[in-house]
Length: 456
Picture (spheres, rainbow, N blue to C red):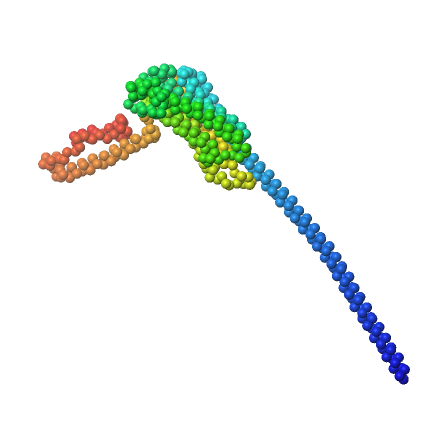
């Protein structure tokens, strides 16, 4: 019996040991399965992460491609728009320049067909030629900016030449088509009381002391005007050459115009002083002789010359000042804003457009019939108000007002007479001794006169 219990105990221990082994095997199997599953999941996770990174990289590359394509399309579109704008501006400038040149050429041929005063009309032809030269050089500068420096020199040379030609034109008209300086001085001496003394700084250039006689003063004033105009003929080309040299030496870094540390500032200042002196000389000579040459309407001619030369000069300075206020800005395509380049383009465009109007102004201010034999100038006293009968209207209003006043005086006179219609007892109040009113202008044909109380 003890032996049986011992065997059962041994059997139980064996079963218990076997169970523990099975349990251990199960735990090991479960752990191995979990490890295998974890390994599979880790591998899948790494593969998925690699795929995600690859997809993200492709997305970034695609975004870069799209961005570059869009940027390229935007730049291309911007260039096309700028090109179209440039072509439009070129067409507009070219059209105005062509029309101005055609009008001027027709005007010049009209003078050549009626060349009655060659000494005077040669100077007119030189003045008229200024319009196509200004227009063509500005158009070339606008289309080909690399040629701007060269054509500007040519334009400035002719600009200075025209200033002196206009003074020579006035002198020729004053001398009645001759170049007799003594006759011109003799004519100026008649207006010695209107002549202003010349500048003292030019005293060394005068042949005689201006205070000696009227002729000496007239000769000094004439020489002063010629010197002031001639200095512009010399200074303007020199400043243009200096500006061209400065542009060649800037090494791609444009020098500012309004900075005293750079030479361009002093070039502009010298130009301003020279322009002022030339304008002073022309204006002084015009005021001295305008009565003697009034028949050829010198003032509109002077305004045309002043408009082409001086107005375009000051216009360029104004545009330059405007451009320098936006010097630190950028253009729409991200490029740096160059105020000098923008100023040059705007100035060239404006000159091309303005030359058409100056050619029309020249056509009316430099007519050919002024130099025909027997020419008589039209009356210059006619005003705009006379052309639209404004003077007639004012005279009619005055007539109505005066008539109303006279009616009131008659009514008051009747009240004073009262019941005495013949005025035997009443002392009549005398009316105005004489009053005249015209129905029309002051020189009208119809007049109503109240004289000594009677209407006639």
